[in-house]
Image (cartoon, rainbow, N blue to C red; front, side):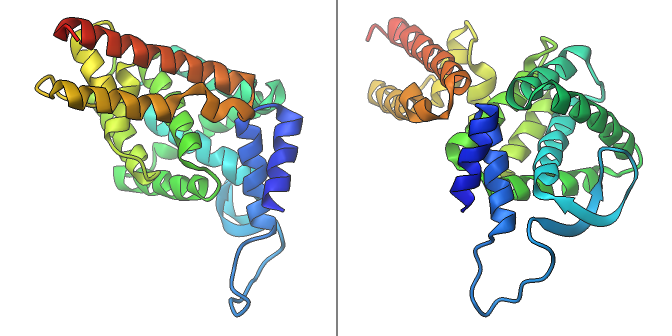
Length: 264
C-alpha cells in the first residue's frame, strides 16, 4: 500500500518529492509492525509536538504530509541560517524547489511556514535547533532511499551556494545533515565542488586526494558514474532526470580535468 500511495503522489505531482510524500503518508497509514506490537492513534496521523502552517504550536494530530513538508523545511532553515543570515537568493532556491515539486499553492504555504520556523528558532539553543533537525532527518529517512537522500543533499547544497559564498558553518551544517540521513560527509564536498573549475574542485568531486594513484582515480570515477548515472532515476520524472544528467556531466568534466592534468 505504501508504494501505491507513492505512485499516486507521483501521478498528481509528476515529481519524486510528490512520490516520497505519498510514500510517507502510506507508511503512516499502513505502518510495518509485528502482530504483537501495540498500535495506538488514528491511521495516517501522529500525536506529536508540531508547529502548524497557521502559526502556533502544541500537541495535536498532524498529517503525514505535513510532517514530510515540515521536515524538508526544517533542513532548509538549518542551512539557510547556518551563517547567521537569511539571504534572498537562498530563499529563492527554496521557493523554486517547492514550486517545481509541489505547485504554487503549496510553495506559498511552505514559504509562510519557513518564516515561522525562523521566528521559532530565535528562542531555541543550538542544541535544541539541532534536535529538531535530527528528528526531521529521522522522519525523512522513513521514506527515502539513498538516491532520494542524494537528491535532497543536492537541493540543500544549492541553497548553500546560492549567494556565491560557502562558509564553514554552512559546510558543517550540510555534513551533519548528511550523516543524520545515513550518508557520508564526503558527499557534501562532492556536491559543493560540482561545477567548480579548479583541479582541486575536480579531486573533491571524485572524492580522492591529489596523491591518489591513477588506478584509484579511475575506480573513484567508475563508482560515481554508476551512482549518478541518469538511468538510475529515469522513472522518477523528467525534472529529476535532467538534474541527474547535469550532475553526471559535471562529474565527467571533473574526470576529464584530472585525466588531462595527469596525462591519462
